[in-house]
Image 1: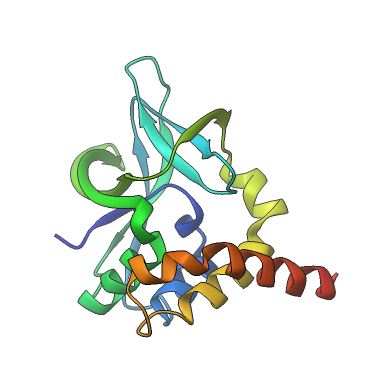
Image 2: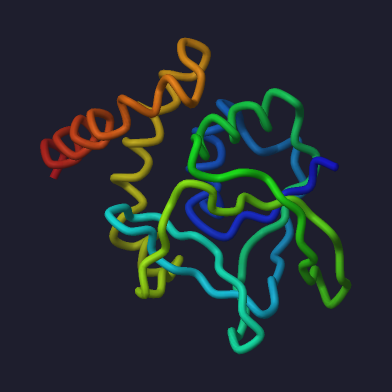
Length: 165
């Protein structure tokens, strides 16, 4: 099953295209809703993790269908060692569908909510630079090997971002 629910930075088509190294023309992308869930900011990062509880109101996202094996390999590299694929049920146009999503593995959610629109307005440009630098490591290192460079990549992206302002 190559249908993935993206709830965080990969909801951005610009980020998704940077990650897969290609346009998204070959993909079917639909709005989706994950009930009984919420997004929390990952501690010391600017991206979210999805958490579940019956009291949570739910999370908006997108379901992407038609991803190739290479797309998925690149997405798994992007998600690094901190997230692992699992399945969940989301609603697409009122119909429930089982899809893959990336669940926390090595990250700790904060108590702070994460909002896509706020991130898009304030953080997307920096995240695009970070993603570009991170994905340059794809094919040279495994995600586990590349993980040691994460802080360096973030610093370099931040300096590039600041020089463009």
